[in-house]
Image (cartoon, rainbow, N blue to C red; front, side, top):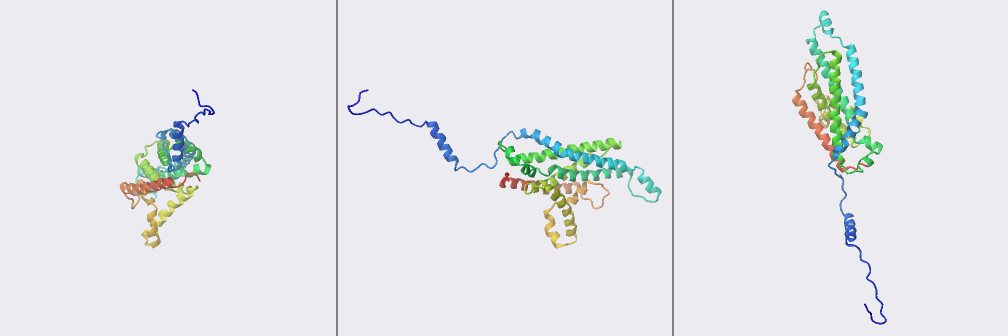
Length: 289
């Protein structure tokens, strides 16, 4: 192509690729988008295996030996002829030996349920914060609340499975049948309410184990004081669950025992409320602390 004398041909300046322009625009707009607080991945179940292993290695390994020690002590000290000896001494306890054995199993199951619930639920959130593991855990897309709720459920199922093993061993050691439905129902109820309280505390503090046990005892004392008409107890006792209603899953000979339906309704309401509050805290409070 010819050109006029004295003029030079200049090449057009290179143009940015359209795709590159679009990428720059997208990056600029991204600065004004609100941050994603809870990334979500539908394959949350990929963590299930590790949660089960965590329960076995850090919780069942504590619950099971303690329960077996209690079983050994109970078997060593239980005397099936105790009622007969008492009757010969002129004392009638008003129950049969099978009823007494059943009552002892129910009471031991309640203790296992409360202690096992604290062990199973403590540190669900705080233990990972203490070790800084949450920085690696949530590096992949996962909804934080869903992950911790799944952990709570896995630990509850693990507690029930461990308790079922203990009850089966009790039957084997004593060579007689033991109740299964009532103890497991009581343990499940205890886990929801006691574990729910521990779960809520775990979102605030790192060492909630002792505080959970302390609040269980405080709750019983507050409600006793409220029945006596103490104004400070009447105003504060409703903040904590009526743990004394767990006796509904104990021996039927206990006086003033509430019905199971009443106990389940009251305790599960408190437990569900604590869990919901814990989820709300997780949504609003930074997990990196």
